[in-house]
Length: 121
Image (cartoon, rainbow, N blue to C red; front, side, top):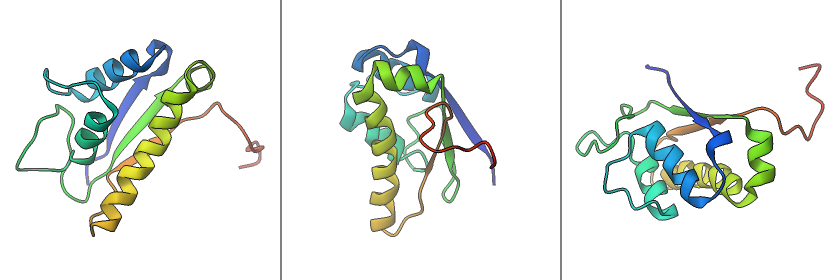
């Protein structure tokens, strides 16, 4: 299995437009990417579609792409709606794939928004 990690520079995200720009650049979305939530989710959900590779970042069936959010604490405060879209959107993509009998395709990694004390982890 190949390990794919895509880093998103959250410092560059200040609104919905820049959210889509950062993901488009990091994943190599096609030039005709509409920059909508629906288009974002559709592209991420099909990263393993071998018959229709439209992104520069992709994986084979059964592999997982990790989305690493850099500088997430300030992003979550500055753009709570976009942060929520990222977390819940990726979760929804994985859930929908499970409902269709497919494996999850995305993992999310970030640190900086502590709700729990993780110092003894």
